Image (cartoon, rainbow, N blue to C red; front, top):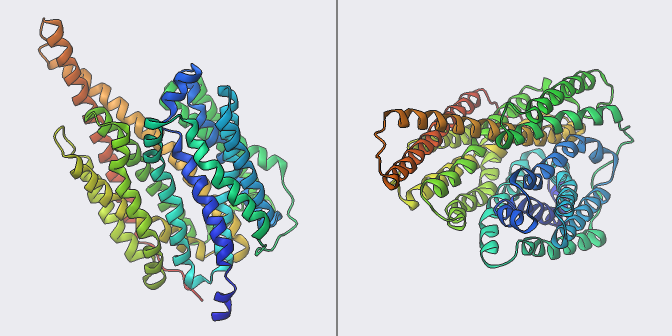
Amino acid sequence: MKDQQKRIPYGMIAILFFGAFIAFLNNTLLNIAIPTIMEEFSVEISTAQWLTTGFMLVNGILIPASAFFVQRFTNRALFISAMAFFTAGTALAMVAPTFLLLVAGRMLQAAGSALMMPLLMNIMLVTFPIEKRGSAMGVFGLVMITAPAIGPTLSGWVIEHYSWRTLFGIVLPFAIFILLVAIFKLKNVMETKHVQLDIFSLMLSSIGFGGILYGFSAAGENGWTHWSVYGTIAIGSIALTIFIIRQLRMTEPLLDLRIYRYPMFALSSVISVVISVSMFSAMILTPLYVQNIRGISPFESGILMLPGAIIMGIMSPITGKLFDKYGPKALALTGLTITVLTTFLLSRLGFDDGYYYIMAVYTARMFGMSMVMMPIMTNGLNQLPMESNPHGTAINNTLQQVSGAIGSAILLTITTKHTQTKMTELQSTAMIPSDPTEASQMMFQIAQEATLSGINHTFFLSTVIAALALLLTFFVKRVPTS
C-alpha cells in the first residue's frame, strides 16, 4: 500500500485541480452579467440566453464522448488540448466586438471545460487505491461544488465596480499559467487503448443530449407549447432511444450502458439524478425569492448563498475521509435528512423572514448536500472494473447535466403556473379600489403574494423529491474495497 501511495502524482493532480477549478468557476460567472451584456450589444433575452444555452449544448455533446477521448488519448495531450480551448475561448470572449463572437468564445470555453471533470475523475480512480478514493473524491467535490457556487458572488461584485469583460480578464492569466505549467510539467499516468470512434453514435448522442438540453432550457423563455421546445425534445428523445439501443448492441460502444448491470452503480446514478434536481431548485428559487420578493440586490443575494458554498467546500474533504472509514450509507442518510428538513423550511417562507434566517437555512441545506453527492457517486464507481471507469464517469457527468437542465426547467414552469393560478384566484376575491394608485398598489401586493406562493409550492415539491432520494438511500450497500 505504501508503494502505491508513493506513486500517486500529487503535483500533477494539483495542476488538474487548479485547471478544473477555474473552468467550473467560469460556468456560473457570467449569469449575473447577462443584463449588462444585453444592453451593450442591444440583444433580447432570448438571444442573450445563448451565452448559457450554447455553453450547455457543447457540454451535452462532448461529455458523453469523453469516454472515447479518455481511452484513446494520453491524459497529458487531453488536458493540454482542453486547457488550450478554454484559454482561447476566454481570450476571445474578453475582447469580442460582437455578440456572435462572444457566444463563440463561450462555446470554445465549454469545449475545454467539458473534458476537465471526466479526465480528472478518471485520473483519481486510476491513481488512488480504492480504500483512499473517498478522500480523493471529497477534495474533487470541493472543486466541483465550490467553484460554481462562488461564481455569482464574485460576478456580482465585479459587475458593480467594473466592466463584464473583467470577468474574463480575471480568468485569463490563470488559464495561461495552468496551460504553460501543464505543457512543461504534466506527465502521463493512464494507459491508452486504440478504440474506434463510432461517428454515427456520436451524431446520435449529440442530437439526443443536445436536443433534450436545448428543449428544456428554452422552455422557460418560449413556453412548452412552442415548436422549438417540443420539437427539439421530441427529436432528441428519438435520437437518444436509437443511441441507447445501438450502444447495447455494439462490441465497443461510445458509452457502455451495460455497466448498469452493477447494482450499486445503477442505484448511485438514480440517486444522483434525484439529488441534482433537488439541489438545482434551491440554487434557482432562493435568489428568486430574495431578489423578487424581498428586494435584495443581486450582490447581497450572492453573499447570502456564499456561506453555503464555503461549508460545502470545507465539508467535501471531511466527507471523503468519513466515507473511507464508514461508507456511504450513514453519511447519505444523515445528509438527506438534513436536506429534507431544510427544504421543507424553505417551503414555509414568508414576507418577514430575516436575511440571516434564510442564510442559515440555506447554509444548513448545503451542509446536508455536502454529505451525499460524492459518497454516493464514489461508491457506485467503486463497483466498476477499472476499464469501465471512463464510461462510468461519462455517464454520471452526462446525467448531472441533463437532470439539472430538465429539473430546473420543470420546477420553474411549476413555479410560474402556480403563480399564475394563485394570482387569478386572489384577483377574483379581492376588492380592487377605484383609485388608480391604490389599485396599482393592491395589484403589486397580489403579484408578490402569488409569486411567494409559487416559490413555496415548488420548494415543497423539492422536499418530496429529496425525500425520495432519502428512501432510495436505504438500499445502498458499501462496495467492498478488496
